[in-house]
Length: 484
Image (cartoon, rainbow, N blue to C red):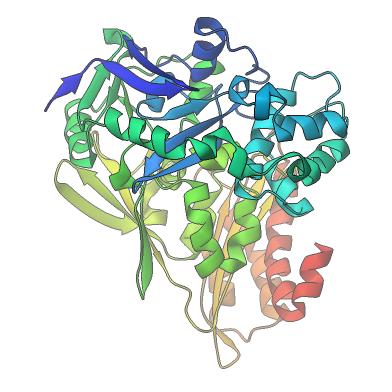
């Protein structure tokens, strides 16, 4: 397998080639300390505040796509073959302020100014995608940006008025897109990258088959997809992760295949990648999906990573278990498939052998008569970790519950089905009496812990009430959802 020992990418308008890049080196530290691009700020160093927001562009099926990401938890090695755009790259015609910056000035969208560059970059990404957004689109774009000064109202007004000062057609990223895409294509050489010191080695496999071989040969390595979890291991806990195998660039893990009976996705599909599929095929989960983290994290984080790390409070497993999802695991060329709920064995332990990785997730399509919903309870509505998450699937036949799957996160050491509650529902007439019986049975299914996010009693009550909510929303429809 051909190899190189340097990463290569575009930074604003310059090509960068770096050798000896440590796995734990963050993009933020490189920008600020090495290149003195200090408009990108360090606020939280955990992907929460958005002060470090930059755009990262990558080629997908020959097209160049830009997304806002958190530079504080994005590792430098992972931008190989990408275009990194910082706030310093923005400009209007004749060296004037960029339309988004001008709108922020006109609407007094900045006070202390610390968070402003990150907000500008998030709004810049929104402006390029939707020049005249509605308020809901603006709020979604700003989920990953925290501001303690403004109260957000002037920032929202700035987003609404940016198109008055210019349109994306005149923006340099639009005008130069073909040229940048050609430069990125020239950087692709289908080789394995191995760089950094031995104890902090970064490895970028050439393709999925190469990844399977590398991981089987170095099963002690840390696999890094979106780094939304691993990034905090480094920035908050100072944990070593070398050798680290970076897989976010592997197109073979980012495929989405829609079939008549199911939908199959590679483990590297991000939350943002999958959002259009949610809207088209699982619209009942759209509100839940939009509450997973913030925009920057949804662009980085992967569904396969959320599953593979085995967290009991991961957002995707409850909904996917309720839908009857399965996972395909791979070790070199050998694959095996198992139900998703069987993958989680105990806290921090999954049914995964050394050198074996999650390659694919299979999600059955919703069938006639099947009621599906997912809910999340957290201290903060947006960009927060779940105290309790729930995924429900109930299949009705002639007014009776023919089958059901009730899955919860935050209630046990792993994402887990509520078998006693399911038994209380199955075969019963669809109605509040059956739901109340299942709510009572949840106390037999779970003995949740008490921690900083919620007490055990609160978690049980919330889990019960979410099941009741499923019934009430189904019976009373949109009116109930608007009140929630």
